[in-house]
Length: 182
Image 1 (spheres, rainbow, N blue to C red):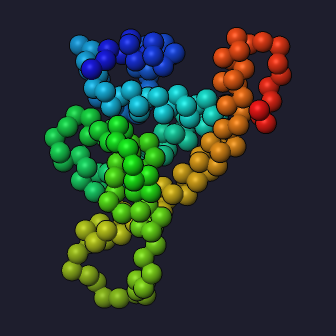
Image 2 (tube, rainbow, N blue to C red; image 1 turned 90 degrees about the vertical axis):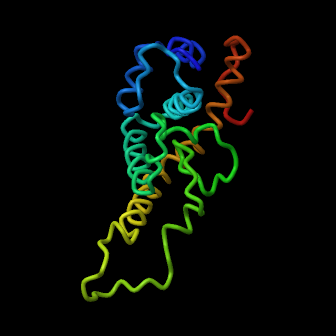
């Protein structure tokens, strides 16, 4: 368990800006401190994305899609106040996990987006609505992947610059110029 002040100090951010993220990302607020460990990797990921020049609006849009997906898949039914970020500390199975929450879909993200052989022709009314048949989840996953792709590309593009900046910073900001090839 962490206090918000401890998380802020570890991440090099002020407490007020972290509290703003907690509210904008609709995470639970723990008034007496005691933020669960899953807050640290989630907020750390937001810091890293912002350092890589991913806008907060892009992150929020991706987060809203992730939460919708998790709700459709009933991830919110486990009774945890932090259900939306409980997977943040999980490792492995990258191909099955949502980007921000690290929620494990149980199947590869990319293969879930398309199901070959589905009949999209008009047919008579169905016994179940689209939501119950999973159509909304697939449509939402497709939108999610389209939004995620440019964010991941930006991370790949910014990575050499951030590595060079880290090297420069470790050298106490010496006179060496920023060189992405180092």
